[in-house]
Structures are given as C-alpha cells and as structure tokens.
Image (tube, rainbow, N blue to C red):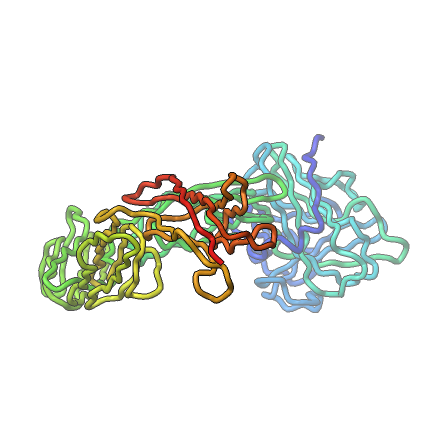
Length: 508
C-alpha cells in the first residue's frame, strides 16, 4: 500500500499554535462521548466511534465513573484513552475520519500524551498511521506499517504524568479514511513495559479563509480578520503586521500571507462601510465665512441634526457644536464637530521699492491677528534689503493664512562700480588699500593690478577684493598702475557678466 510521505517536524512543536481552529476530522477526539459509561478497563469501544484494531485491550476512562486507573485529569473535558506496551503486547486506537482526505491536501495532526512511566518510554515509536481501509489483526503484535506521523519530541527524560503535545503534518495521497494511533517499530526490553495516556486528538486541513467580503456600518465599526491556520509558522499582512489576527478600522482591501511547513497560503478580503462619512476635525472659520457640513446622500436614509434638521447638508453660520445621527436600516452612525469663529489675519509689506546705487531699504511689516513668518525663513520680522529681489511673507491663524510680497529693484538709476583713482599705503590707517564698491546688485568676482608696462602685480578671485600696494611681499614704488575688476550684475532676475578697468596712483 502506498502512503503519504510527511513525518513529524519535531522542532515545530514549540512554534505551533495552542488553539486549533477549523473542522476536526477526528470524531470524538477528546473522548467525551460514550455509548455506556466505562466502569472498568478494556472498554475503548464505548468511546464511539473509536475501535480496537487488534486483540490487545486499550482502555477508555471517563469521569462519569471514578476509577483509580485515571492517574491524572484529562487534558480537557472528562475523558481520555489509555494504552499499554510490552513485549508481544501492543495496544492501539483506531477511528474512521469524518471525511476522506483529499489528494495533495496538507493536514495538521495533533494529540496530547502523558507518560505514566517515562523512564521506560521508547523514543520515536509513538505515531499515527492513515489508511484507506481499517487495520484489523487477530494478534497483539506490533503493526507492520509505516506511520506518516512519528513523534520525535517525547523522551524517557520527560516528567511523569504531564501532558505533552505531539504534532506533525501529512500530505494526503487521497481517500484515507482511518487513523490508527499507537507504538510502532520497537518492543520494550524485558520487563520494560509502560503505559501512556492520550487525549484531544485532532486532524485539521491546512487552509486559510478570511471569509467573504464584508460591509460594516460606519467608521466607528471594527472588524477582526482571523487568519489562524493550523501549523502556521509566520503571518504577514499587507500592512506589515505579523499577528494571526488584524483589527480593521477603515474600509479597504486586506490581504495576508501565511507560511506553513506544507505550503504558503494567501487570501484577500474587501471591507466596505455602509455609511462612510466624517464631519471632519474641529474647525475655526474667519468671521463672516460659512461652511456646509455634508453627509453622503444615500437612499432610504434618515438624517437628524442636533436641532432636528433632516437634510444631508447643513449650513453653518455661527459658532457651536454640530452633530448628526444617520440611520440606514439597522445601521446608526453619529458624528460631531466644533466650529469656532475668529478675525482673519492682516499683513502689509508696503509698496514696491526702486532703489539706486548702494541705497538700502528696511521692510517693516504691519501684522495683526496672526503669526508672522518670511517664506525664506529670515529670522527677524523687520529686514534691511540692499539687493534686488521679491520678498514674501505670510501671517497665519486658525481661520486663514494671508501672504504678501514686495519687489525691491535697483532700476531707478544705473547700478555702477566705483573705484578710487589713488591710495596711500603708508600705514596711517587711512586709505591704505585700494578697493572698489558698487550698488547692492553688483558682486565682484576678481581683482587684478598691473604696472605701467603691463606686468601683473596682484590678482585675487576671493574676497576681500583689495590691494595693499605690495608685490611679492615688497612695497611697490609710487606711480601709476592699472586695475581690472570682473563682476556680476544681478537685476530683474537676470545675471550679467561684465568688467571695468581704470588707472590708479600709488602715493607714499
């Protein structure tokens, strides 16, 4: 007989979920139901539909009849099973599944086991075998089959009478209808017999289902998406969260990816809101302004505002608290908003200015009812200008933001470069260096000085653009020299490159 090849992945036992969801394909997996209350040993058949596949004598105990053989409380409920293993004597549990297994479908198997004499337990012998037909033998020997689930977690070092989980995965060939649980492969040594208790057996298809697309009442409605999947190792929602559930607080499409040892599963669900509206955050208006509070207009919907107004659009003309109750079928949604009024801000930067030469101008903004700021982040409110440009500022308060600008230009006269025709580098602190200057729109980029025969005496491309009357550290002789200055002229948002030459008398 061919069997599906998936064994227990032992280390997963720590990671697998404690709560198993979905339809359990193991009937009476908790041994709660019985035909007649078991009042002695060897009565597994009373735990219908469980049956004994061999001539050994497995036990079924239930708290309907108190017996000293139930050495510990059931893992849950009131019933449990009890198996014994000795040389030549192997006890098993068998049960028909609720439905045959589907081909290539992955299933998660789980049961809880407590060892009565763990020191005698044989590692890697306890398992579950799935078959298309029931196993039946007239002996008490070990079953000669290969279980698809084989425990690797329980050991002879485990504590006595403590419930431990045994779990694993099986990928079905298809048509498996029975499961047989017990010990396989090894007999205990002479006088090495042992007992074990079994409870809460389950077999679940590894499937993911977020449910159908859903419509909620409104924005205050919440919905919990449950992606719990048997044997899941990892959850990843479209928002990056990694829990098995996701709390939905707004409409949208939600998806999840679940990784299991068998396969990776994905599912998507769309959540809509029947009454999706919001009056907005509390608002401050400028005096004289009006506001229309609007709720979407739906058929068969009743609107009730705080004063009894029954339309979906409410005109606001004065300060106050406004609220609306919207009713559609069984949905009732309410929302409110606080409206305040204040004076609008005021700002004046003054008229545009045409300046001349090296003239400067101080802008003194007139501000009222708001917080002032220059749009270029200039730190003080008043600012002195010595170059052309457009200067913008704003005043902001709760009701509005007002902006203004002023244009400063140097178009009222020619913007010229000025340079002296002589200087006296004698160290008296007066007129000791040669330097040029111009209006605020001129930026000097280089200065060069030549003697009367055209030899370069001095040159610089960096500020300050000035000559102290020396050449290679030695004082130059009095006389006439020539200078050349290159500069940029920035006016009306245009940059012009130009230069100017002149004569200079060095006097000592």
